[in-house]
Amino acid sequence: MGLFLINVVSYAFTIYYFMMFVYIISSWIPAMRESKFVQMIAQLVEPYLNIFRKIIPPLGMIDISPLIGIILFRFISDFALRGLITVFDLIGLL
Image (cartoon, rainbow, N blue to C red; front, side, top):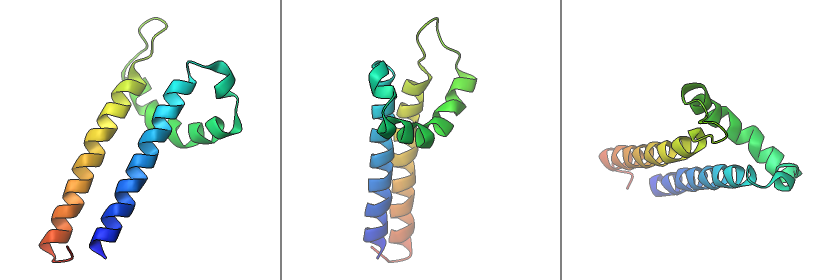
């Protein structure tokens, strides 16, 4: 049971990571931004990325806040998965 839950959480983090990546790439291609698929991704990704936009202002025309957000997301997801593995290992579900 523990390994199944860890895999589900890992896949969820991976899917969200790639959604952020697609959203960031779509900012370079205006026609892509208009698609329903990218608009759906935007609704899921924007709340997380807006946190970094409030902290890190754009440098002229370049907004590096999504880059910082995606890098920090990788650290957070790795930390969360390691914590989940540790907890399940301690209670004997692995």
